[in-house]
Image 1 (cartoon, rainbow, N blue to C red):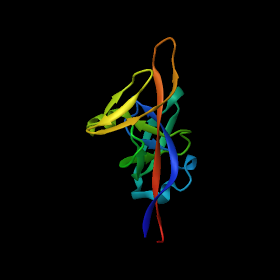
Image 2: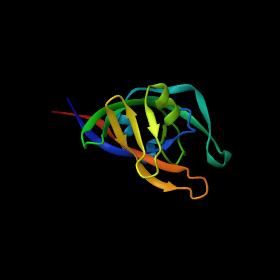
Image 3: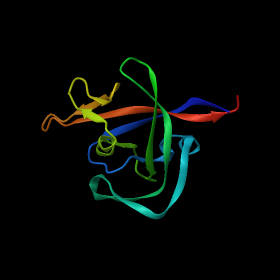
Length: 147
C-alpha cells in the first residue's frame, strides 16, 4: 500500500466554528481517506448561517498535506465532523488555536502558523464595512493505493 495525495478539498477558515466541519458530498473520496471514522451515537447539533440547524452524523481524522509558504507539501491531520447539507467545509480557527496554531488575518496576506509551519490562506473577500476577511485553505487528502 502507498499513500498518495488524492482529492483536494477547499475549507473556509471560520473563526466562529467550534469544530472542523465537512460535507462529504463536496469532496469525492473524503470518507475513504478518513481514519478513525465513526458514526456518532448522538448527532452533533450545529447552528449554521441563517440559524439553520444541521446535524453532524459521523466523525473521523482527515490525513493529508497542505502546501506551506515555500511551496513544500507538509503532512497535516485533523479531526472533522461530517455534516450532510452544510454546503461548505469549515476549518475551525478556535480549535486550531487550542492545538497551538496562530491565525493572522492581514488583508493582503492572511496565514496560519505553528512553529516553523506557515500556510498562506487564500483571501476570498473583504467586507468593506467591517474589514472582515473571508479566507480558505486547500487540503490534499491522502488515499491508500496498491503499490
